[in-house]
Image (tube, rainbow, N blue to C red):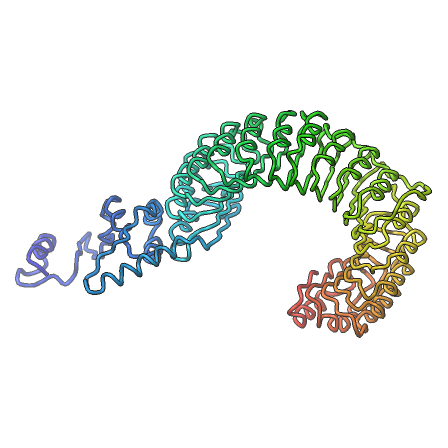
Length: 626
C-alpha cells in the first residue's frame, strides 16, 4: 500500500491506529460506534459513455460483446448503439510475429458473423426494445441476423424506434424484416434500417400507422436488392412511396398492397410500369383504384405470373375488359378476383382470351358472372387447369356442366363453394362431352347440389381421383353409389364430411372398389356410419393412411375390427366425439399405435383420463389429442 493511500486512510482513523501501523481494511468508517464496509462501484462505471463506447468497439469479437452486454442494461444499450461499421477490425497484437495470422482469422470471423443465418421472432409481450438490443448484440457471434419478425408489442415497454435502431446498428446482414402492429415504430427506426441494412430483400409492414412515405422512400433509395414488399393497413403511406420503389428497386418481384387509403392509381400505375421487367406477383386489395390501374397492369404486366384483385369497388367492367384485351398478360398463370363489381360476363370472356397461359382461375363473390360468361371463359382459356368458384350465386347447374364440357383437355381441378344458384335439376346432357382430364372435384356447402346433380357431374368426370363433397346434406346412397362405381382410375382422397344421409353401403363400396388406391377418407359427422364400415375398410384398404370417423356411430367392436386389418397401416386416426368408444378399446388403439403418428380422442367421454395417460405413455411416438 503506497504512502498516499496510508495518509488517506490515516485521516479517517488517526485516533484508532498508531502511526507505525498499516490499516488492514480498505475503506472503513465509524458511525455511532458501528463498523461496516462501504460498497464501492466498479471503477469502470465511473467512465463516461464516450470512453465505454471506445472500449466496446475495440472488443475482439461477438462473444466478448455478448458477455459485456450481460453486465447491465446500461452496457447493453451502449453496445447496441455501436454500428457494425464502427467496430474496430484491426486489433493490435502483442506478439508481432503472429500478427498477420491473427488478422486473417479476425477478418474471416467477422465475415462469418455477417452471413445472416439466424431467424428471430418476437410476439406480444416479448416484443420489447431490450430484447431487440440483446438480439442485435448477440446475433453477430452466431452467424448474423438474417430474418426478423415482430408481431404485436408489449403494452408497457413495447418496441420503439430505439429497438429497431439497435437492430440496424448491429445487424447489417438483415435480409427480411416483418413488422405487424407496432404503432410506436416510425420513420426514425425505418431510416436507420435503410442506412445500415443494404442487403434487405423483403419488407413486410402491417398496421404501422407511424411509418410514412419518408421512411419507405429511404428504404427504396438504399435497398437495391429489395424483391418483395407488403404494405397493409398503413394509413400514412401513399403514392410517393410506390413511385420511389418503382424508380429505385429494379429487382422487385412481388408487391402486396392492402387497405391503404392514400394509395391510388398514380402510385400503382407508376410502380407497375417501372418494374415491368421484374414484377411477377401483384396483390391489390381494398384500394381506391379505377380502370386506369388495371389498364396499366394489362399493358405492362408482361412477366406477371400471379395476380390477385380483391375489393376494388371503383373498377368497372371497362377496366377488366381493357386488362384482358391489352394482350400484355401473356405469362399470367394464376388469377384471383374477389368482390369486384366490374367482373361481368363480358370482361370475364376478355380475360380468357387475353391470358393465353392462364392455368388457375378463382372467382369469389363475383355476383354479376352468370352461366354464359363462365362457359365463354372456359372456351377461351385453353390452358386452364384449375377453376374455383365461391359464392358466385348466378352460376347454375347448366353453367357448371357447360364449363366442364368446353374447358378443353387440360383442366384437372374444379371447386364449387357456397354457390347458392345451383339447384338439383334432372337435366338431359346428350350434347356434353366428358372431361377426361379432371382429377379433382370439390363441391362444398352447396345446399342445392343433390344426387341428381352429382350423377350428371359424374358422367362428365370418369377419371376422378380426389372427391370432396363436404357439407352436402342432400346427397344419398342412390346418388353417390353410381358415381363411385363409375370411376376407373381409383379414388385416392375422399371427403364426405357432414353428409348425414350416407350409410355403410357407400363406405363398403368405396373400400371394395377403391381399396387399392384409397389413401385419405374423411367421414366426420356421418352419423349413419357404423362398425360395418370399419370392418370393410380393414378388409379391403391396403394403402389407407388417414381416417376420420369423428362423430360416427362406431363402438369398441369397430375399433377392434380396424386393428385386426393385417394390411392396414394407418398413420392418422380421428375418433373425436365417438361416445360409444370406451376404455375397452385401449388394447386395440395400442395395436394401431404401432404405425400411428396422430390420434384424436377429443370428446370421447367414455374413455377415462387414466386410459388416455396410459396410451400417451405407451405410444410415445404418436401425437395424441384428448
